[in-house]
Image 1: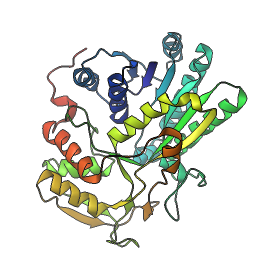
Image 2: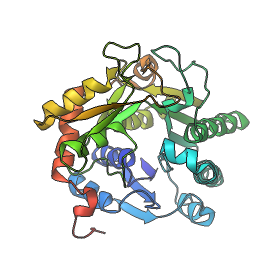
Image 3: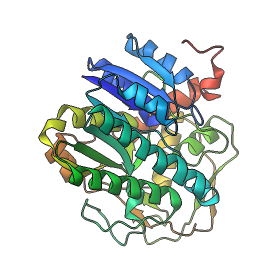
Image 4: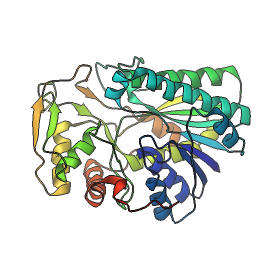
Length: 342
């Protein structure tokens, strides 16, 4: 299968591109590199031992998208987009323009090219503030921030498009909390500036880049008082995209599917597991709760097993061990490379 991967240099996109290459698919990737590094592409090629074409392209470049999609792709896997919740609150117009307008451009280019198979990187943020878990795909959607709103609106675009004409096969994968890295230690999460996600902050603390982890809220109605989340290994997520592509002919229209382990771990449990993986005590301090944070949220992943034949296979200790291997080997991220391989 000839597959176009948008956001191929990003955290999840790079892992998915690698899985697709290793499964024998022809992969073409693009990224605007606004929050990623082309060095990730060189690492993908290195680990896969196969060629992968890459183009620097922006979702807002309609002419470029039209030209590229005209090359007769079998399917598109769409990761490209801005993804920081706090930043989206500060820069909502930038998020709406890039994520929503850019995705509309991609869908229009696909439509013009006659490509009707799409796997979209959605998020559990479309569920907004939740009262209880586990959450299945029928849970009401109500995003609590601009980032989540963009994911929700892109989902609605896909639902509307699939209803408007026959032939579309769209799988909307709603991730819970991606963590970990490829077992080689060659590709992983490389945030710019202060990490927005918990695991890279923990690992940067373990490697000595940061002094301590701030734990927002220690008085939730959970076993240890800290928030509980469904952490899922990024390689498991990447394999779910491969499974979605391999079963996409079984779909009709647009279908949303949760991706998670089906159980929750607390922030303190994650810190403890990361301490075991790194062999270092990771210091932390409690801070006030953040507005909008739920006490506990995890997935009902039943539909993923039924529709994709997929379930998460890698446990919390493996997530932390792989993430630590990446962080220890790449303390400066991809910028530690002397040069990018083109």
